[in-house]
Length: 217
Image 1 (cartoon, rainbow, N blue to C red):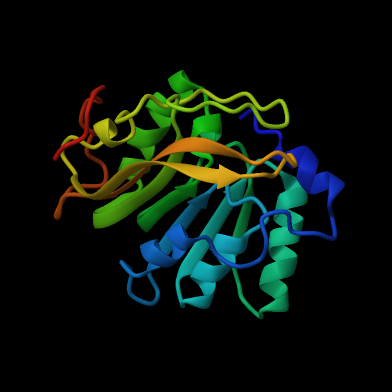
Image 2: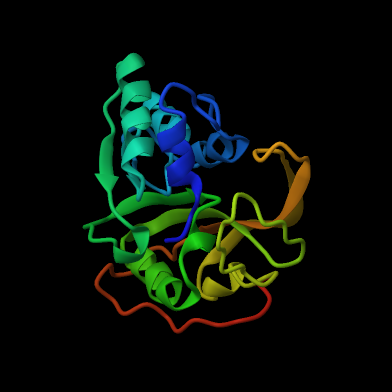
C-alpha cells in the first residue's frame, strides 16, 4: 500500500487526526449485524470505527499497515475497556481465516494497486459468511485531489459495485465528500457500496469471475 497516513500517525502520537467518533458509514453498517458478529475492518487507521464496532458487541479484527496508527487504536480501545484484535500488515498480503459477517473499509482499498486488489476482493469474498456483508468506500477518478503526496490507484465510477455481479447490492452511491486534512478545503469523489453474499454459498468455493462496468441495479 502507498498511503501517506502512516507518516501522519507517527507525527501526531497524541492526537487522533480523524477523531475518535465513528464514521457515519460505520454506524450504518453496524445496523446490519447482530451482537457477536465478526467484523474485519481493513485500513482501520487510528481505530475509531473498529472501536465503535467493538462497543456494539461485535467481534472485531482491525488491519492496518501503520504500526503507529495501531498503537493509537489500541490506546482508544483500552480507554473504553474494549477488546479488539489488531493486525499489523499490508491488506494486499492479507493472511486470515474467516468467516466474517462483515468486511468493511472506509477510504482504504483504493491504496491497494489495481492488480493486487483484483486478487484481494475475491479473497475477501471467500472470507465472508454466506449471507454476510461487504461495506466499502473507495475514491474514484471523477474528481481527483492529490493530498499529502499520496499515490492512489483510483476506481472508475461503478467499478467497485462491478466486483459483485452475483451478490445483492443493497446500497450504492457516488458522491463527493468534503475534506481539509491538508489545510485546504477540497473534495474526493467516492463510490460507496453495501453488498450481501448469496445465502448458502460455500466458503471454499472459487469466487465468481470479476466484471468491469456498472453495478447490478
